[in-house]
Length: 403
Ligand SMILES: Nc1nc2c(c(=O)[nH]1)N[C@H]1C(S)=C(S)[C@@H](COP(=O)(O)OP(=O)(O)OC[C@H]3O[C@@H](n4cnc5c(N)ncnc54)[C@H](O)[C@@H]3O)O[C@H]1N2
Ligand code: MOO
Image (cartoon, rainbow, N blue to C red; front, top):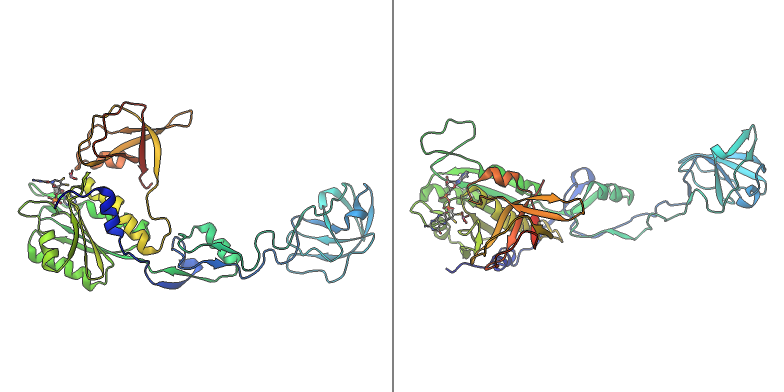
């Protein structure tokens, strides 16, 4: 198969992907979940005009002159409205959040009054509407304030609560099973034997998937045999995973068995090999209802491909309306040579200059095994296939990596 352009590969990964079914969750469980439906206010907020300050509710006309003296006929606190009416020459003691009594059209703050038993002297002229929050100034019953596809922030939760929703309809979290392959891999903390490598890819993949709202299933490390790889793939299906992510064994070597195992299990392979660097040997297909992304084993290739393909897939399954990474403009921090047929995703540091411009400085060693400079990078600098050489200071596009 020929190398597939990155944009075509991404379109294939996302083709026909539908948001997962909805479920109701309490507000406590809804943080960072994705709304499956629009949410309309169940009440008007505030439901009545309310005081924004502690002071006196008055008729502005009676309190327009300094030293006006008004009779205090009652008190209103938050949750305890005053049932009477403020008439000429009268005032009602009021506290923040109290319902403005009938007849009153202004609040004079406590600091601008002198209270004297049953009367109050006004020391600052009242103005109609001053310190009053009109009914519905925040929102009205029926207003749609949260949209389907929104990933709920903590602020959205407060708003949903104020709209009187104890629960929200969200999409089920995607289940992402992660299977590593490689005889050479040992877990962190072990003492690696000669030629052994410490397993690292899965830690980034699980964390990235979870950060995007997925539930992850750890299928461990399969040995480089067809039987072990196939067993891992079967466990993914049995676990009900929506997505299987494999890492390693994606290339052309004698021990690269992932593609063969997937084919033996009946995968409908959409592509293998992308015109990108790092990440060329990535593959994608569907095994029944389960989407499969076969990531390359090189640690940086594995991460960059997951960032570019797994993340949008998880977002689409989660029901998010915004699934694509946002490209930002920056200036190139150093000269770059002409590019070949592979779209490049260069690890780069991002600097903010005093004049507000962003400068992306690609690290000098871009080998796909180098995790230290992946961790140190803040962005991936995107270079189109066959981009001509570019000088420091010329415009470029970057994708910010998660913090
Ligand atoms: N003749 C060719 N050789 C290679 C090609 C090619 O086109 N022709 N492509 C190269 C590219 S590009 C990549 S990327 C790699 C990807 O190969 P695999 O997916 O088969 O990866 P492995 O061989 O299994 O591993 C590569 C490397 O990464 C280490 N690794 C693997 N898994 C993990 C893990 N979970 N944690 C940490 N490190 C891991 C592994 O030990 C190897 O060192 O193929 C090139 N070859
Ligand atoms: O695609 Mo590989 O990731 O160039 O090393």
